[in-house]
Structure formats: structure tokens, C-alpha cells
Image 1: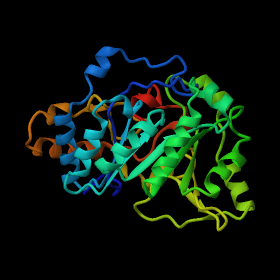
Image 2 (image 1 turned 135 degrees about the vertical axis):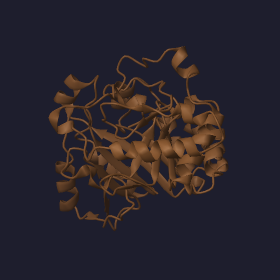
Image 3 (image 1 turned 180 degrees about the vertical axis):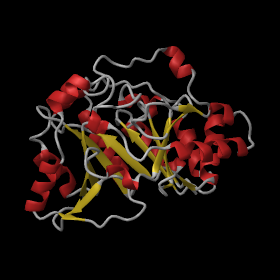
Image 4 (image 1 turned 90 degrees about the vertical axis):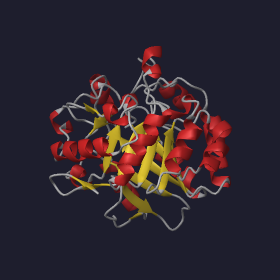
Length: 325
């Protein structure tokens, strides 16, 4: 298994399949996508993705999350899901999506072997949702979520970015969403990126206030497993679903890091907020996995212990659409 100089082991790969997104979320792409046709044309091909996933799996990767931009903008996303699921060693295939195509695509994704689904919804109020995203598609997305539950998908999460003046008063609505549905609500602190500094300064909201309220209302924190992700998870006996809070500015957030990222153009991100990224695409031009294995085993030793968000340094990440968060 891949391990770094701090004895962290990496079993989780987040693979962006495109930087393009059709939403205009205020905190990410308020002016719309900054990717031209040439960017989409340069996305990793299906054979390159097959070699990449096989190489990572041979080094202990067990979970693949397909992200964007918006991954459903790739017409071959169902094929990518099936490819990942059929790779020896991969036991979990997940997709993070804005959900606008969910009712049309979820059945095909499920048949292809999708195990887990994350859908980004930053408000359950239709007007606010449209204000944040530039799209009036909330009802369509919720219909797709319910369809995923009907199909029996056991791991469905709703991601919501916490933001002052946008959704800080919306916790009651989100709690109702998980009262009778088997979803996990993921509340994520707004993160600074290269393009959103002013927005971040105005709207960043700490997750501490959310956790304080959850504790007051009888929510109980789950014990973290070694392989768990970055969220602090909470459960309540009166709710079918659960809550997770992701706080990248909290103490020792990076200590349990177990994930690596690859962009849609084949760049390895050792950290979401690293200053530099390394292209591994040259290792994907042959079916021989050894060049990729050697590249990854060498590169991982350069992974820093922590990001530098506390020093207002988001690294080379322009916006979250370029790598999917």
C-alpha cells in the first residue's frame, strides 16, 4: 500500500474526469466554467483511465470517487463507472455530482456498479438554490436522490457548503431531509481557493457552531475508524439519516489523510491545496503498470504533513471545479 513519510496510508483516489461544470456556484465558478473546448478534448481517455485505476489498485487503492467539474457531462461516465468497478482490488466506486442529470442517469450508473453517491445541494429553498447555483433544478435533483434510495443504494450523501448569508439558518431544513430518508448530510466548511478570497472572507462559517447545536439536540458522535474520511460523523435515534461535518481548518485535520487526487488532465495532487502538481500522464501510455507504480511510490514521499490554509495559502488550486474538492 502507498504510504508517505508520515506513515499515512492511502486507499482512496479522487479522480476528476472533467473540469467543466454547467453550474455557476457563487463560491466556485460564479462566472461559469473557465474551460474552453480544448480543455475537454484534453481529458483523460478511457484507456488512460483504465491504466490509471489498475495502477493505483495494485498499490492498495480500494475506493475510487469520480468527480469533476461535473462528471455527468462526460457521455462515457457510465463506462468509466463500470471500468472502475471491474478493476481487481477496487471495492467501492463513488460519484460526486451536482445532480442535474440524476433522474436520467442513476439507473444506468447503478447497473454499472455504482456503490456510493454524493450530491451537492447548498440550500433546500428553491430561490436560494437558484441564487447560489444559477439553476432552477432543485426539485429534479431531489427526485433523483429519492430514485437512488429506491434502487437500494446504501451510501447516499448530500453535500452542503456552509456559508454566512446563504444557508447559515437552514439547518432545520436539512435535518428534516434526513429525518425519514437514509441520507447522510455532509456540512462542509467553505474553503479558500485562488479565485475566491474575497468571497471566503465574507462568507466563511465555522462548523463548530453546528456541532454545538447537534450536541445540544441529542446527536451523538460516532467513533472514527482508521479508514474513515475527514468528516466527524453524528447519529440520532430519531433520525433515519446522519450528519457529517468537514472542518478543514480544525486542528490535526490532515493527520488522518488517506486520499490522493488526479485531475482530468492527469496531474497528481498530493494535497488539494499543494503549491505544485505533477503530471503522471506519460505513465498511462502503456499497459505496463510499473512506470506508474514507481512514479507514485516516489512522488508520495514528497507529500507535506499539512495544507497551509491557516496561512491563507490555498496553493495552486484556482477553484474546486478543477479537481472536485
